[in-house]
Length: 183
Image (cartoon, rainbow, N blue to C red; front, side):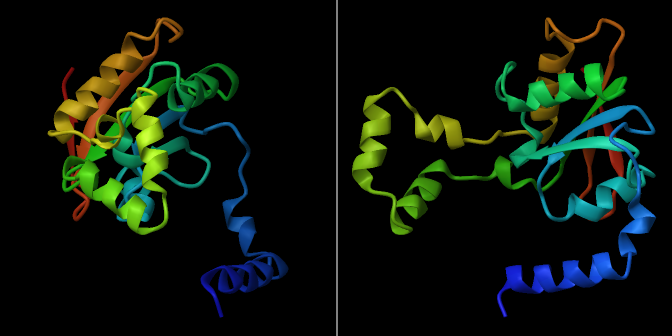
C-alpha cells in the first residue's frame, strides 16, 4: 500500500471515529499570533509544544528556512492576512539550529534536478532569462542573521499595522530551547 493510500485509509477511520473532535477550533488564532517558521520535520510537533500552543492558538506559516525572501510575496501576504483578517496581533519568526537551508548547496540541487529529469535546456533558458537559480536556491550562512533579516523585513513593511510587535527566536530542534534574536 502506498503512503497516500495509507493516509486515506487512516483518514476514513479518523473521521468515522470522530477523532477530529479534540481539534475543533475556528479560523481565528486564540493567542492572536502568527508564526513564520521552517518546514523542518523536527519542528512539526516540537515547536507548538515548546511554545505551549494547542490547535487553534496560532497561525503557522512554514517554508524552507523560515525565510521571508520577498516583501510582497506569499509569506508576507499570509502574515498580513493573519493580522488584518484573522485576528492576529503579533508576529513571531522562529528559525532553528542545524537548518538545512544553512548548508544547502544550490549546485547540488540543480544537479539533482537534472538527474530527476529537468532538461538542461530548461535550466539554460531560465539562466538566459535572467533567473539566477544558484542565488534563488541559496539559503543563508547564519540562522540568527536570517531570523534578524526576516524580522526586519516584517517590522519595516509599509503595510504592517504600526502597533504590531515582531519577535525573533531560534529553537534548538533537539530540545526545544528558544534563544531570543534581538533586532
